[in-house]
Figure (cartoon, rainbow over the protein chains, first blue to last red):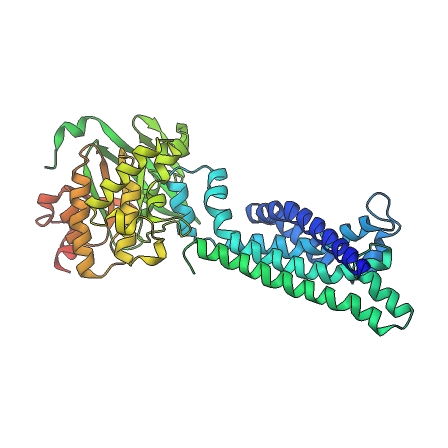
Length: 204
Length: 249
């Protein structure tokens, strides 16, 4: 039981760190992609390709890399960041893209600078979409993090892999069930956060 | 009420040989115009005549391909656009209110950019909302989505007027509204803008009756050129064939 709590905590910590880094990088990247179509298109394509790499293969790629790779929590976090990036970059782009061009024109015509337009109008209006992207990123990351145990990343996957090795179904389930519950809980919580932001702009 | 001429000597808006070319075709074709301080001008024309483009070169939303637009004696190219635009009100066909901000916060946009004290922002916006018959007590805290199209457009007008702009640009602000509401808003708009005698008004429309109701000078655009420039009072008798067509329509 103690083990379970510790591993759940580890699992959440890895996911939280990875998603936080992905938000910090992904929202600016999505904004950049929206402002500079050409360069942004390339960045999005790269995150697209990263997303298609099977997760076990990704961990495999990371093992021989210095600094970001190897064994343990670090490569796990790096892989999760890479997976979380795409939904966040994409949803930021889409959220900005959906801002009514008339609203943008009105803001410009009232004398907002580019930066004011971004912070006062575009990002607040894109927030529900960005939060939706973060929700997808978090749920995916909770799932992929179970595989991180394969490279010594810790988390609930440790129980699953140990269970597989010992052909112990109870042990497998003791890791798999909490991992699934975490994913469902994260989805529910983030859906509420999404609703909150939608309601704040008078849509609820 | 409409205070006329002292105006004409000091042009606020000047077009000097202004052309706008898109995809090789002129949208504005060598325009020369003077608009004096406090004048109320309507740009009339069919769709595609260039009137909206002529409006948008004033606040730099569209840049002239050649020639220059001069505001207050300084070419647009020399103005810092954000600062200039805070002195120019802008209302378009779509209310384009900020959906994530309440009515009062929408109206406060330009005053906040100008860093007015909050106290003044509040009292001014309340006064303006009363004037537009949209009491702040009832409507101030609402979000744009909760308002009808006509109510939203009143908020857009208040948002454009609050900082007493030197110039007010309107691009068919009432054409998406149904006729009864349109007439009501035209009346409210007239009294709200006439109360600000120093504000120069440029009003784009394709509706002759609206142009004559709101402006004291009518400029008719056709194929990117100014074809008629006349006081409203002389418009109905003007002989230009395009005017005749407008009048008889």
